[in-house]
Image 1 (cartoon, one colour):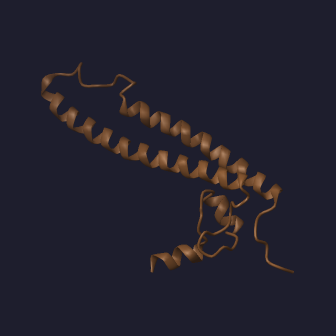
Image 2 (tube, one colour):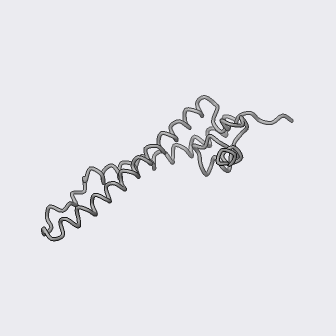
Image 3 (tube, helix red, strand yellow):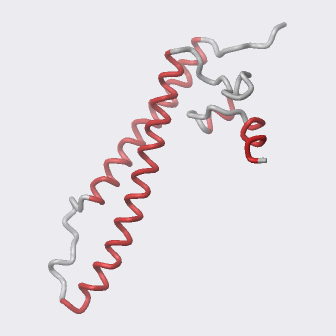
Length: 126
């Protein structure tokens, strides 16, 4: 029996469902982070005494920087998930871009936007 070169349409649909679910959650998380950055909750230092204002502004700046990094990371994750959906449409999803072999289902269930098999990723790190 020859080795499979791509996942079946039924398998691709299973992965699509996983990706869509993760994508919806990622977008929700991104909106929360974006809200934190834009200070939509209204929790700022304008109503505190001047003594604590400097300390709170410093903490708020650090918090916003961290939220900004998290938001960037979340946006990259969303883009990777969207790219995975395109690969499903093209029926190239789950194929390692280094080896050309199928990435194991277990890896794709854990990291649905993966484009490298564990072997290829390990070899790249060396």
